[in-house]
Length: 328
Image (tube, rainbow, N blue to C red):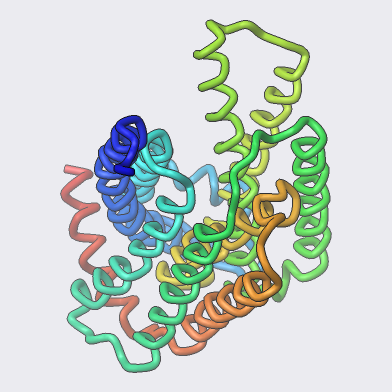
């Protein structure tokens, strides 16, 4: 018996949507790379002028960032990256879009090497391959075994409560270790928090689609959706602070690694543990999740260890030239 016509039409629709979503996600990854580079230089210049410290950015420094054209340009590019990624999610599944974000890590590393005319050493290349390969394999396993279900009110409540606990935990750790926090601290904090942001964004987009289909018939559950929106905004702002502090204490490659490696691992983990998207997966898949996730995170630590910091001055000069042109 030949394939059903409806199945063929549905498959063609999925392929067409993916053909739109994938390029948008790739463009978003490129925008993320360039935006991170410009933001990084803006933070470094502000910290240099105001007196850099290892205890995170002060509120005064954050206010001064808006006066730096490079930081403003970087923020605009990051906003474009977010818009492109969210738009791509309308056309392609999360499990397709998320791994494409790892392309930003490769682009950032190549951009640094290009601007500084310093080739990447073997240790850095291996670290990047571990990051990209680990997160790619992690999400591929998720794609094979994950099953998407409507998010229940109970599950959504658990996500919001867990997010509150995560924010509180990072707040306590920040208060304790602020004076001696390493770049990895800020990167892991930002990446884990943005994992919740990605999850909440997915939920909110689903609710918007439902409201459009129902011609905006609001129910009691929409108050929980509003709670998700509030949680998303709060988490995004706190995550943004940690990102800027990471810029002040580490290279842009590491910041991108936190946003494209830790973020999707946390987001998919929430889907597995809280939303039950891998409820029917065999134990081998769970072992694969843990193994590939550990490989990707290990790659981030290796990148922090072996990153060639000698690139910083050369890259800074190039970004300064662009900033001077913006000020004219």
